[in-house]
Structure formats: structure tokens, C-alpha cells
Length: 106
Image (cartoon, rainbow, N blue to C red; front, side):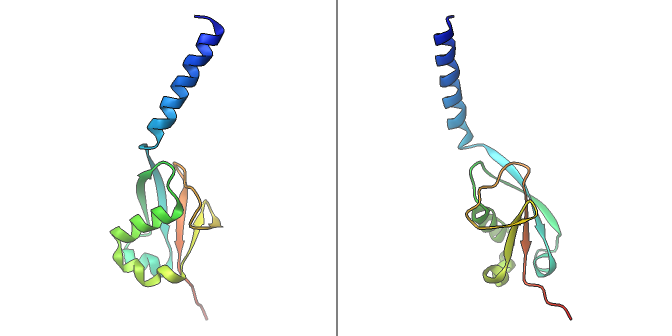
């Protein structure tokens, strides 16, 4: 096989691999703090979600599992790998997504 044929074959394999990744499931670790922990009854969970999903997609799936979180949905913030993140952020396999409700102290 010549060098050009080999490059073409690699390109075709890469395209097939990319197409298959659309259905690939990744795992994200979700952490719950304060009221979110109270509402879910747990401090963390593993979440399987499709490759290319956003923090919003993760949150929607978590709220589907724990509907009580809807109570704080409008006032919580999310952190992805220990940094505050927008809902539009793409999550990757092994990421850590924290759900942080408002916290008051005194």
C-alpha cells in the first residue's frame, strides 16, 4: 500500500470513528452540595451521557432522576472540574460536575 493510499485509509477510519462517537456514552461524576445533597439524599453519583453533551444536558438528566432539584434549579450554579461553568459547556469523559445551590451562613 502506497503512502497516499495509507493516508486515505486513515482519513476514512477517522471519519467512521468520529461518526460512531456521536452515540458514545461517557461518564461524568456529579457532586451535590448543601440543599442539593439534601434533596437527592446523596453527595455524588455517576452519570452516563452521550459524547458531546453539555452541562445543561447533564443537569436535565439529573433533575429527571431527582425531581426535587427543580426547587433550586433557578438559583444553583454549576462547576465543571472545580471552575464555575455555563450551562453550554461541553462535558467530557471523567469530568466532575458540581451542583452548588445558594449557601447562607451566619
